[in-house]
Every structure is written in structure tokens, then in C-alpha cells.
Length: 156
Image 1 (cartoon, rainbow, N blue to C red):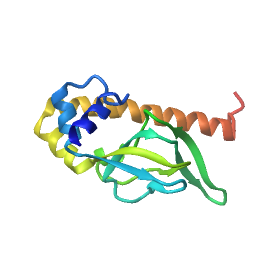
Image 2: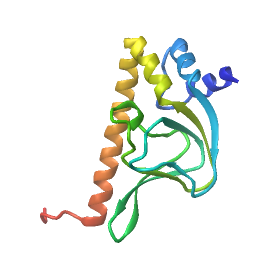
Image 3: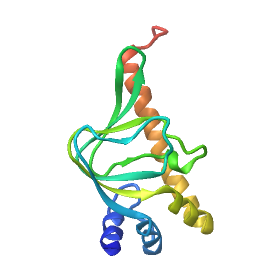
Image 4: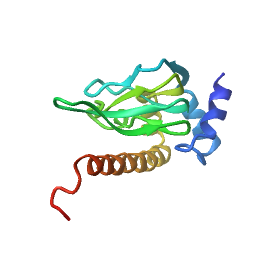
């Protein structure tokens, strides 16, 4: 089963191009998971213990607006990744992530992966670079979504 996970991870956009030994490290922390429509994968403020590589279905990244309910910042589909807070102290989620339909994903245990990254600094640095790019993408999506909702408040 771990070989199958390593093979699936090899083809995932976030981790594509890593050497086979790194894929094996990641697969050792991974398992297949499934979520039903409307299930929460992540809940803002909860302890961040894992991240997900989406294989099928779509996941909404949401923030809460006072008096308005959840605001979808971005929708993540197959090939996308959900969750980065497992990597950075205090290891708390900054967003909710909700399955918009049935979702299949690879769940990767954050504590397991952090331990392996700390033991192998080159591997850890490569993970940091890849997750930094994911964080930048999320921040840009958030900025664009907020501009869509609120417009340019300074009238520019």
C-alpha cells in the first residue's frame, strides 16, 4: 500500500519532482482518506495535525465573516493541496476547509513529516520552499477574493 501512496504522491503537483527517497519518506506518513460532502477537513483554530493532497472532488477554503457566515476564498480540486499550518508553530488552522462533494485525498501526518524534515535538512528545506509557494498562492487568492467582494476601498 505504501508503494501505491508513493506513486500517487509522485504525480501530485505540490510534491512532483522530489527524489524517490523523499517520496518514500512522505509515503511513510501518508494514508488514503475520504470525506463526504459538507465534511470539514480543517477547522479554523483547531490543532493542525495533517495536510491533504486532493485526488478527487473539490474542497472550499473558507473564512468566517461576522453576521455573514462562511466566505469561500478558494476552491481546491484534484491535484491541489489543503493545509499548511501543520508546518508552522503554533500549529493551528487559519481557515476552514469543507468538502463541497465527496472527496478522496491523501492525508499526510504533519508531526511525522516534521520529524523527518528536521532529521534531513535538505528534505526539510525543499518542503519549506514548496509550502511557501502554496502559502503565497493562498494569500493571493484571498486578496483577489476580498477585492471581488469589497472592491477597491480607496477608489483607485
